[in-house]
Length: 201
Image 1 (cartoon, rainbow, N blue to C red):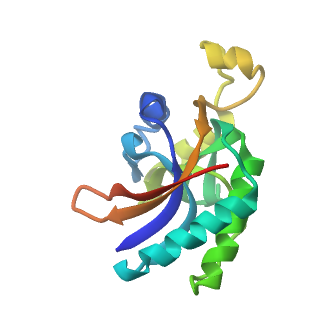
Image 2: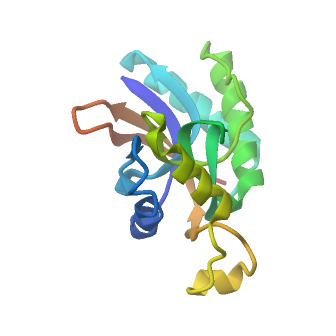
């Protein structure tokens, strides 16, 4: 089974995620993710023997406790790309608040899962929600322009709470649990199923 550790966006934010993706509809080569499955990955584990799930769950419980993180609010907003604007492979939505708590969770989970033999992360942790992947560079310039020149949001209630910020503010939610999630690859893209939920605090 293919596993990762995540926090999930609520269903109520899926339309706002889709609205941001729609702004990139004319970018050739960009494949958007399913907004109904939007999530923020804390740790990708990869292919794992099903018999190891209890061991992983125990490690995640310990990591959550060690992190000291209790339920906390997150505001999803702002755009970015990996690895950089000159060569784009992933377009992502960032976090405007809650990044410190997400980083603490990631670091605790990273320590516990690497102790189980999982590969350490090759890059610094950047809290993000993947919006799309770039299959070819046909629409790269459009993506570059939108990411760097997105107009300030000034037309909704969230904008009033975040005056002067550039980039989309998708919404706010409270993170109450970390999830061990199974990813199943199919012809229509991956589907996700929660294996277990580890409550915070």
